[in-house]
Amino acid sequence: MSRAAKLTLAGTSAMAVGIVYFVHFQQKAEKAAMHAGVIRDIEQQRIKKERLADFEMQKALEEEYRKVQTVRDGGSGAEG
Image (cartoon, rainbow, N blue to C red; front, side, top):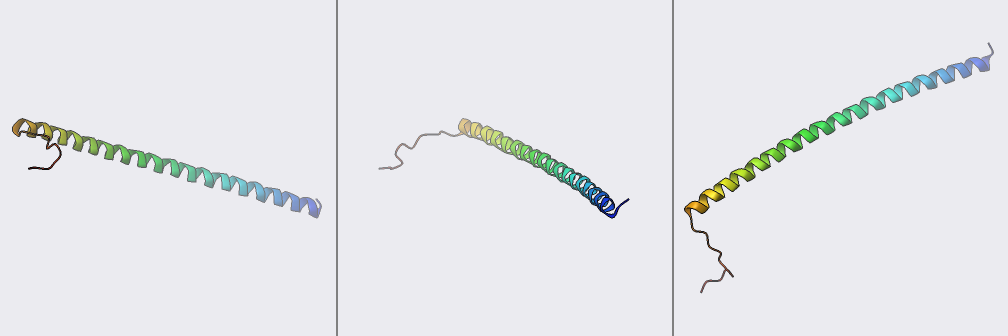
């Protein structure tokens, strides 16, 4: 085998190994990014549930207070 053929074989082999390694690394990075997205979505859902629970609690408190207290619109806000 000639020297040029050996260099060509070595070069193409090294390039193929490099491409396989790069694709493997890129797939791992994409998988990690997708997993981070799932974690972020779960956290957003948890926050949304907490806010909804707070809203429901405030709504219940408002109804309770409206039963007990008389609520009037102050109009323009100026007394006199």
